Image: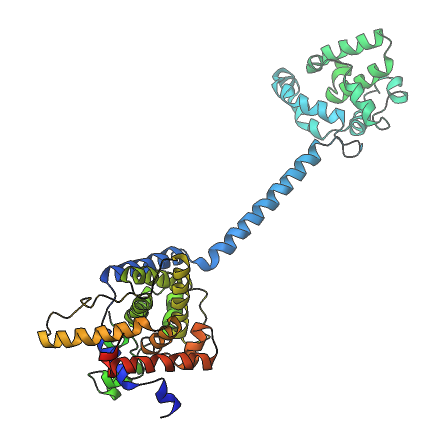
Length: 211
Length: 215
């Protein structure tokens, strides 16, 4: 008898195969097949190959966007002392003035042509205003303006302090603004008065002539 | 289902073709056109549920009988059977056809049985299955009696085998596994597996030949 026949007896196999006729209960079949179908659907239903990478990419993109946004907010909230990068006070003033000037219909009606030629206030700077004024032939505001306070040489801090000399409500019209300037001069604040006058003339170029 | 009826039949050991009512050649031709187990498993991993159905119907009964005889209790066999197929379903995406699918399947079944025994310390494999289980109502009284006695002798002989020998015999008969595959499934070397199988077959042969001397 060979080794193979020692562990492979046909009679034993036949006897076992003839007797072992049990089959799987149908309830088990149903359970297993339902489980197989359910698992396959739940995992295969939504293109499982790309849904996870897309989820990761979306998470990373959102995180980067939030971090960038936070860093920008922090940058904007930090005080900036660089004079070149800080908005100058006169620009702030002029920007604040824009709505009020738009409401000044009478002035536009009086000199429509001049108003049309006038450059936008937002774009005006003090040196440009001076130049425009000298080209138009009108005389300089005062000698003090030329010799005293100068926006070209003033520091940002000085400019900011300068703005505070007149109440913003008084800057709405040339008359009230000039009254403020006179008050400053009466108080002995001639430098502040001169710088305010320069701004007044920048904003209202025709004021000197009408006065 | 369009699957060939033969493809739904599980392996019946080395003498399957001889026992089959159809000629061996026709059986082989039919099997040649059926998809491979590993291919079916890979198709199921890709979402083809019908591939799993073919695979399941091909192996469910041999696996069930293997677990039934290994555990000796129908309830235990039912539990382990569900556990086995649950693990196969779970492994559908990680499955790689590095070995024969049958070896993989019976290794899972073997490990599930070991886990079940560890979980249920009271489990005993010495119980004999009910002889009336799934009996054919069409047989005559004499045939039924003879079948009942033969079955009882074999069941008793099987139940008295040591666990390792019974495991090796059932893997050989139900799974159609070779000695090498039995060694792989049970985690022993080839000589040990062969020895276990040889002892099991010898004891069962004695039980069949000398029914009067059975314990």
